[in-house]
Length: 112
Length: 115
Image (cartoon, rainbow over all chains, first blue to last red; front, top):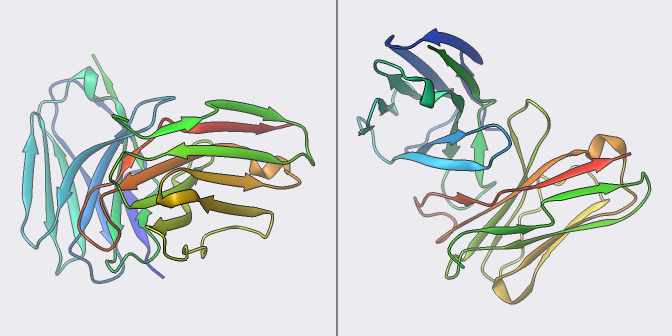
């Protein structure tokens, strides 16, 4: 059974600071996705990582994938309040089995 | 449609009643997923459909849960004899295909409250 673990599960930080969210998974996969969820809203796709060493950047967010370590990171640079949300990583084992397996999410609060 | 559409957006039901939740996927997307999100929790996979193939029901929590997908498009998730522990947000997602590396797009969800 595929397990996806995120840490931290909760993070409070100040604007302007940098931080990294980690996503570990338990089986071989080279398909990892990051989503953002605002309170009361649905999930918005942020990044799709499909190979070892893949790096994607959008604004102050950068995601990377190390398939050998079974680890993805979401790095936040010079955080701003608008980035406050819950961030989920999800892993696809491929073959269409079981859809995506999600981590529990990281609840991020960025304070002015 | 432009995105995944779910209805109703909110549903309050009495314990023991049956409910039906509807999902309209993005046009052209052959894969459709149902997930459940309890308050403050992650997403729990329920069921997925790929085109007209038999669905993968491995995530359904009990036999009170069932889902259909008609014509490879619209899907209905039915919960019979609802229990309080069924209260959650039910999210539907679609992607171009299952098994391929395509991202899934989510609907706004149906918030189910069983009283």
